Image (cartoon, rainbow, N blue to C red):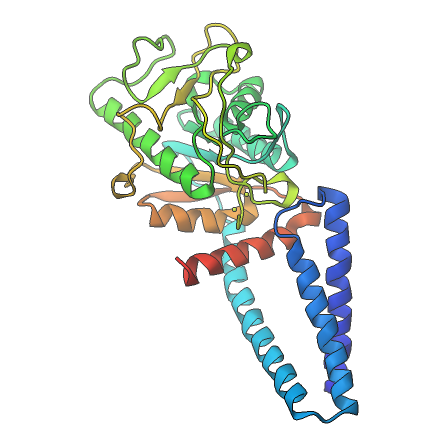
Length: 345
C-alpha cells in the first residue's frame, strides 16, 4: 500500500507540473489561479519523498506529519468530488426557451476583439437570439486597463455584426466581477420592467435626450472616449470571471459605454453608477422576470449560485462551450471559488 501511495503521489505530482507548463504555453504566464498546479504538484512530490524517508527513518514526528497531510488530502478530495459533481451537472444544463432576459457575462477583450472564452459565449448568444426572437440581452462587462474598449461594447459589436437586432441589446458597463455583473444587470432588468409596467418601454427610435430612465442611447463607437472597468475574469482561456468565475479583473472607474454600431445606432447603455432610476443596493436586487445567465459551461454553477444569493427568483443557465485543454484548470478553479463562497461568505 505504501508503495502505491509513493508511486501515485509522484506520478500525479509530475502530471500537475507538466499541466502547469502546458497552461503557460497555451494561455500565458499570468493565467489566473495557474499556481495551484505548481503548489499541488510540489506537495505531492514532497509527500512521496517523505514516505520514502519514513521507511528509512522511523521518526514519530514525520509519521504524524505525513499522516496528517494524507488526511487533509482525503478531505480535499471529497470536497472536490462533491462540488465538482455540482459544477459538472450545471455544465450539462439544457437552456430554457423564451426567457425574457439573458445576461451575457463578460470576459477578457484583447484590444477590441473578444478572447476565445468571450467569443464562445457570444456565439452561443447568437444561437439563442435566433431561437428566441423576443429575448432581450444584457451585455455585462466593463473595461480593463489592458482593453481598448469595454467588454460590453465588444459584445455589442460582435452580436450586431452577427445579425442580432440592436433593439435587443443593452450594455451594462459598470461591473468588475461576476457578482457585480449580476447585481448591476438586475438593476437594469428592474428598470426595464418598471418602464414596461408604466407603458414606457424603449423603442428603436428613442433618443438619449428623451430617455429619462436608466439608459442613454448609444452613439458611434468612434466617438466613444469614455473609460470603463473590466468584468471579472475567471482566468483560463481569457476569462474575465473566475474564482476570480473571471483573470483580467480590474477596478478602474469608467463612464457609460456607447454604441459600436455607428451613427444613429439605437443600442442602449445602462448607467447604473449615474442614473438615480437604476440603483445597486443589495437590499433592492430582487428580480422576478425569467432570466438566463450565459457563460462558459464551467462557470454556470457558480453564476447561478450568486444569482440566487442576489435575489433572482426565476433564473437558469445557458452554458457555452469551453476550451477542452483548459477545462481541468477551469473546473478546479470554479470548485475552489465555490468552496470559498460557502466557507468564507
